[in-house]
Image (cartoon, rainbow, N blue to C red; front, side, top):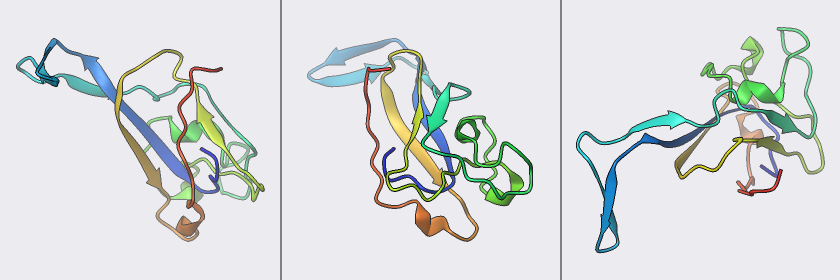
Length: 128
């Protein structure tokens, strides 16, 4: 995510398994509807830099904190990723496969500096 400079928690929701048919351009799922899961959970991540200064030690601001399953949005609890004030900061996750993603949920920090996550874009690529 270019333009990233803040604390995030990321969820990429995809269909776990489903039986469906397509009719008249619409996809109709079986009953019960399919389950969704976070395809980014615990996948490999990286980022342009790592911000230090939290209270938990060397992993403060580490990229994997965005996808470790912890939903605490307070940076000072050591639960969010964070870059330094890079000119073009970025963060990425390798989903290690191809998925039909139907939702992206990006969660920002709650405490001060929530305004730092702005003017960002989400890009998708098959490149490694």
